[in-house]
Length: 170
Image 1 (tube, rainbow, N blue to C red):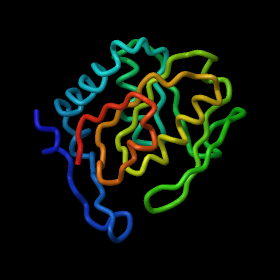
Image 2: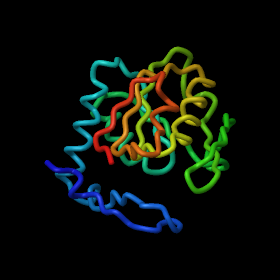
Image 3: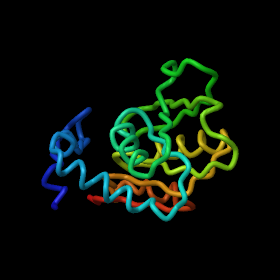
């Protein structure tokens, strides 16, 4: 299956100069979505994952079914103010903005093996913040999986100490 056929390029979104990769056609197609989830899950099968963590919001789309495939739990990393219990929070830069993410302090137990899943690796800021949150909570990041990597933005350089898998590269 050619997953790139299901990703639409949207120029100048959310601001001028950004080439947004719209995954809506991919997740709207049951076969394409199933194929992507299977491929991303296969990457993690030998990593003895205890939990899957996905950042808000598209990390939820892929992280949850991957957790189901692996038979483990899913932990959401949310925007500040969206989680009801005590949290860790990390701020970071996006390619076009600044943002923060939060994780419940008690969602990850010390030593748990964590797979981080997100839809897109661009500059790496979101994933760097997610890694810091997982590690603050005592988790051990054993792999990071993306649907798409924008190689020209060199986000992989920021996370080069971790095993990384990208299903599609642009």
